[in-house]
Image (cartoon, rainbow, N blue to C red; front, side):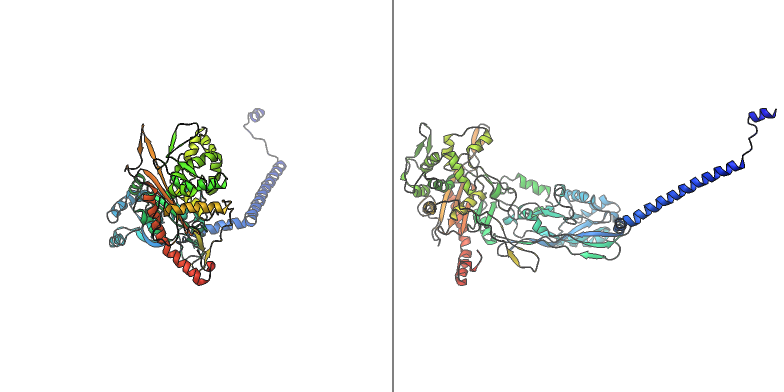
Amino acid sequence: MRRSRVREGRYKPLKEARHEEALFRRRALAGFLIIVACLVALGVRFSFLQIERHDEFSARSEANRVLTRPLAPARGLIYDRNGVLLAENVAAFRLEITPEQVHDLPATIARLGEVVPISDDDVERFNALRKSKRSYEGTPIRLKLSEEEIAKFSVNRWAFPGVDVVPYLTRSYPLGEEFAHTVGYVGRIDEADLGKLDKGDYAGTTHVGKTGIERYYEDRLHGEVGYEKIEVNADHRPIGEPLGRVAPKPGENLYLSIDARLQEATEAAFEGRAGAAVAIDPRTGEVLAMVSVPSFDPNLFVNGIASVDYAALLDAEDKPLLNRLLRGNYAPGSTMKPFVGLGGLELGLRRPEDTVLSTGEFFIPGQSRAYRDDVRGGQGRVDLVQAIAKSVNTYFYSLALDMGIDRFSGFMSRFGFGQPTGIDLMGEGSGVLPSREWKRGRFNQAWYPGETVIAGIGQGYWVVTPLQLANAVSTLAARGVPHTPHLLRAVQRGVDARIEPLPPAPPRKNVIERAANWASVQQGMQEVVRSGTARGIDAGFPYPIAGKTGTAERYSRTGTEWTSISASPIERHQVLFEAFTPADDARIAVIVALEAGRSGAHDAAPIARKILDAWLPGDQQRQAERVAGGGEGAASP
C-alpha cells in the first residue's frame, strides 16, 4: 500500500543535504562570477567612456550647455575708380514676429496687415523662414519699413505681443539702374544657393551675390564669419551674458576701373534707346564704362522682389533684364572691315596701294548672283584706306573670297571673336565667328563661297557681343597688344587698410606682325571721321579719332512672312560705331551698338562722340598731372 502511494507521487523523497549544499555552492559561485563579470564589463566600459572618449563627451556636454552662435560679417563695399560708392550697407528696420509669444498667428498677421501693409509674398516668405528657426527666435515678416510705417506700428505696439521692429543692415545701390548690369545685386540665400555654398562659411548670413561683380567676387566681398558663445538652458534659450566672442572679419572693399561720371554720361547719351556701349583703356584692358539700356533697379531684388514687379520686368518688350553687354547678339556689319583689311595685309594677299574696281556689284567667278555695294553704280577704283573710309563692300567681298573661310576665321580669332573675352563677370556669351567647323557642327552642312563673301562685310552668320567687339577694337587701338578686359582695379582689406592696386597682367603676344600694316588700317579709320561715312563726328575734338560705322539689316521670321524687328521701317537696322582716340596713341576705345536705327553714322556715332566728350576733361586733367609730375609714370591711368 505504501509503495503504491510513493509510486503515485503522494509522498516526495527526502532531500540529501550534502547534495543540496554542493548545488547551492555551485549556483552561488556562478552567480558571483556573473556579477563580477558584469562589474568588470561595466568598469571597462566606464573607463572607456571616461578616459578614451572623455574629450568627445565633454565637448558634447559643453555643447548642450554652451551654444556657439555665428556672427555674419559685414559685406565689402564697392566703389568706382574715383571712390564713388556703388554698393553699400545701410541701416534698415524690419518687422519680426516671435511665434511662441503669439497666441493666434494667422489672426495676428491679419490684424498686423491693417497697420502695416503685408503682401502675400511677405507671408509666404515668413512661413518658409519659420521652418528653419526655433519658435522663440524672431522671424521677419516685413523688410525695410519706412519711417511712416515704423511710427504707425509704434502707436499700436501694445496690441501685438511678440511683434517688434528690429534694426539690421541691408545692401543698397545708390546709383541704381546705371550699374545694375555691372555691379549686379545680392539676394536672399535660397535652396539652390545652399547646395553650392559652404554652410560653415555662410552661417548667419542671409544674402549672397546673384549677378555682376557681386557674384563674381563673392569670395572677396563676403568676409569671414565670427561667433560668440552663450550659455543656454535645456530648451536652448540664452541665459546670461555671452561667454566669449570672436569678431567677424568684414569683406574686402573693391574699387572698380569704371568711372561713374563717364558711366552716367554714357547712359544719358542713349536717351532711352535700346542698346549697349563699352569704353576700354587699350593700354591696360580696364573697362571705363559699360552700359546696357534699358536697365532696372537692382534694389528691388535685395530682399525679394514682389511677384508683380518681377512679372513686369519679364514681360517688358525692351527686356531690361537682358545684359546686352555680355549676351546681346549683334551682326557687326561694316565694323569688321578694318579687321578684314588688316588680315589681307598680314596674310600677304594685299598691299595698301592695291586697288579694286567698285562697279556697284560683285560676282563670284562662274556665278550669276550679284553682291551689291552700298552706293548704286559703285565708287570706282579704291585702295584700302578709301575702302575703309567709304565702306566699299566690293573691296572686302573680293578680299574675303581670296582669303578663304579657313584663313579668314583663323585671322579673326586673333582678336577674340567667337569666344568669351574673359572679363570678370559671369554669363558672357561667345558670339559666332563664321567658320567651316562652326557651320558643320551647327547645321551639319558644307560651307559655300557666297557665305565667305558676305562674312567679309560682317554679315551672314556673324554674331558679336558689344563687349567682344570692344575688346577687339581695344586690341586694334593698342597696335595689336591684347589685354583681357577687366573691372576690378584695387582692393582694400579692412577699413583702415591702404588701397592696393592689382598687379598688371603679364604681357601677351602681339597679334599684328607688321606695324606698317596697322598704320594703313588706322589711316583708313581716321579718314572715316574726316571724309568718310562718319565725317564731321570729330568736329571740335582736340584729339584725332579713328572710327568705323556699321549697319546691319536684321529681320525675324513670323509664319511665312519676313518682317523687320523694328517698329519703324526707317530704323530697321542694327547700327554700330567703333572708335579710339588719340588715333596714334589710344587711351580709350569705344563701341556703341543700337538695336534699331537708320545707320551707324546717323545714330551710333553721335552717342560715341558724347561718350568721348564726357571722357575728355578727365583725360586732359590726367595728362596735365603727368606733365607736372615729370612723366608718364607720375600718375595712374
